[in-house]
Image (cartoon, rainbow, N blue to C red):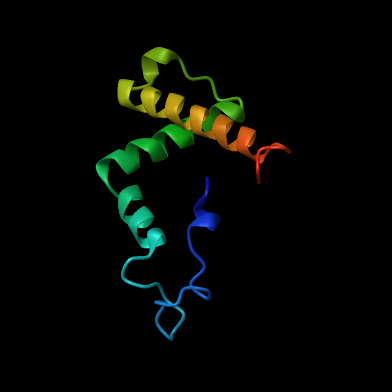
Length: 91
């Protein structure tokens, strides 16, 4: 949800001349995390949430416990991000 805020290789002093990412780029760490076991669970949770927005019916019995927990965390983080974007929150 905040990927675009993590890094701009054009502005990073440590970025290689070819415009790639530096060794400690937060985007690289995010990509690695998204490929991990937990990252895949989060991806599945996001896919389920998007499917439900499109009207796909999914019962709670069909959602794994770890996916449901990830859905709750994603919803909380989205709410937090939206509150941070509201006027008067220092942004």
